[in-house]
Length: 214
Ligand code: URA
Picture (cartoon, rainbow, N blue to C red):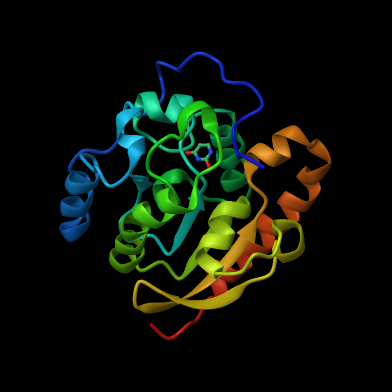
């Protein structure tokens, strides 16, 4: 199932501009390379590369699926309805976007929000690995099936792995991966909202108590 939002409305002109040069050190170099990426066919149809946004020293990172129409226009992740729900969940655990880093498995929008392909995910993976290596988050919350499968290396469905932290080595250091439902799935099925709230509370506890060797 794609993480496309239930409805794609017009772009929000008040949405945040993408970062430019706002990242620390080596991450800003990776950003400059990524925004002109030509590693896969998506470069032909994208408007903007959506590198990711937030704190370059965040202990909590979110990884979604791929930019949608608004993200593609604005160059920033999660600026539509899924983003509003993500903001609400962050607010409920006492955090803001600036406290975390938000990225996607794919940095460019697949046409018509179709599912990412394996070659696209493989071509884009080095950007995500570089982000993890440089930001060094303690916890990576994966949003939905694509990001979870990509980072855990398992085909398990999000409905069976959500809410349960797993330890992995990514970008050269140990991290907790914490799978969550994608906000777009919760927007489509409001009955998942209670689960998402419960999972965000568990995520906060994990981030506050996370003590993995680095
Ligand atoms: N869905 C995603 O997975 N990522 C975005 O940036 C927006 C919607």
